[in-house]
Image (tube, rainbow, N blue to C red; front, side, top):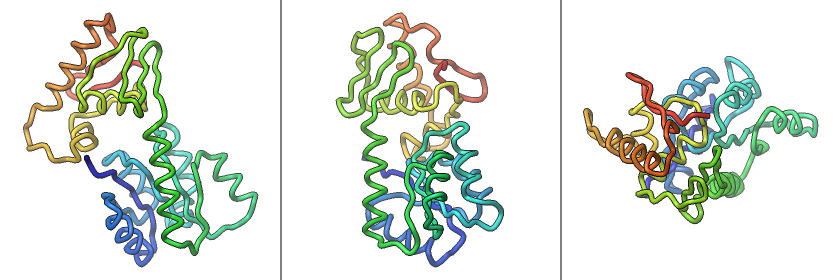
Length: 221
């Protein structure tokens, strides 16, 4: 089972290091960014499973980061903030944050909230037109007929369905599904995509999977 990746956007290095140790001890892979812009870049590069986002960042407010992320991503976002007012909480949730934790916080509380968000994301059903995925049952259907997929094909399809229309490069798919462990020059991603395309085509799912030459793959939104 691959390790889930958590992006920590936090400019206080002491807090960031504590978060990294706690998360890695819990089995997560951790990527750190110490500023808002760096965090947005890292989010595109690693496509994390969840983001822990400090609100008071040196370059711009964490609320702006939430807004920018929500333009093309549904990744769970937990905001870390010292601003404990009802108006601020309502603002953050309205911008698209999934949860917030007030500083100072107990590590056990934060870990529990992280696991809740990841569990909810992993169990939510996905649908795109007549294509449906049930991650809990590991069941895929197209036009109500079962689509028989290998575990990796299922994970790739779920990845693409979470952001229909977005083009994922081979490197991004390799990083997300194989955690970057594929050797350079490997054609494993292309083989899986070809198999997935053939299975969709066999069920008359013509054109669902789009190849952008020289860039990568996407599902038509």
